[in-house]
Length: 126
Image (cartoon, rainbow, N blue to C red):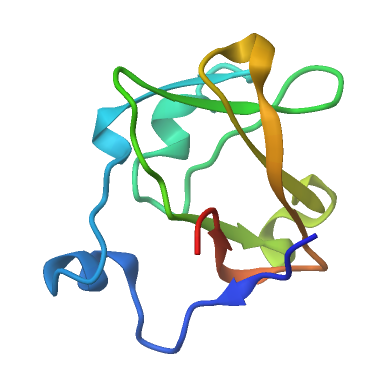
């Protein structure tokens, strides 16, 4: 299990991208969800607006699937979760799995969140 790496104060992912520290590749992904309520889907999950969000509408586990058209190395996943805003809807466990297709996914990292209130980093690769 991995513990979350809190983003240092002022380390906004957009700012890190502008300085060349990180490269945002989300625009290259094809996202899908295990379920969602109308108006609370992939577009709201990825829209850079902290007032909008994904809301599942089905049984657990709730899944966010991220696929790329070609082999892509992902080193860090930024996740914003705010327990104060979401309460019981806030994820408590996040699992990162990789593979060449849905049938051969292997878990590489697991992260437990306890009442998160910040941007959290999930290191995929060292």
